[in-house]
Image (cartoon, rainbow, N blue to C red):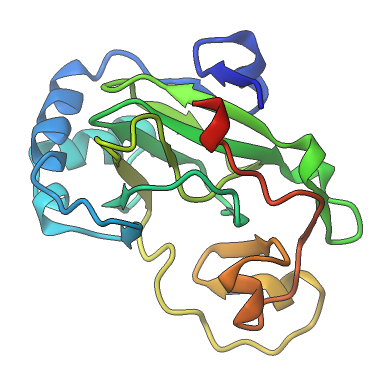
Length: 212
């Protein structure tokens, strides 16, 4: 699979590189280095190690315009697609090592299904803060080096990815709401689909192991 860079023009439809926040980025990277590195993939929506940093206020004010935000992480080892999700707001990512995101576009969802042929891979250099637009489908990062894995900041609006609200199902999108502000499209082969979430993708369950 071709792997683009977030510095390439192809990334412009999916997100952008954030500049001008060097001091906050350095502070977050130092704290992120102290977070766990699971053998598989681990995710914590909010971690006090990050949330209590002065840099958290910088992310809140400069990335979200003052909206309440949460700073957590997604760490581990991964080369698989498995699923994609989207939120109603952008997500900001920053890695202690290079990492790869498999991204789709919400506009490419047809009748509730995304064809995996439409997905692109983007490598983000370590220490580069990026915004992933709300209209970009994303999920767990992939590592570039299995010996190093990945530690990636996940900054989102407050309470995103926490307990799913109890709602009456009124439309197809409600069926794939799996947490607060989280709509999930699992691949048929994924654990998410096997747990009962409605399948949202067709085609190959992408594995980039041979491309890195």
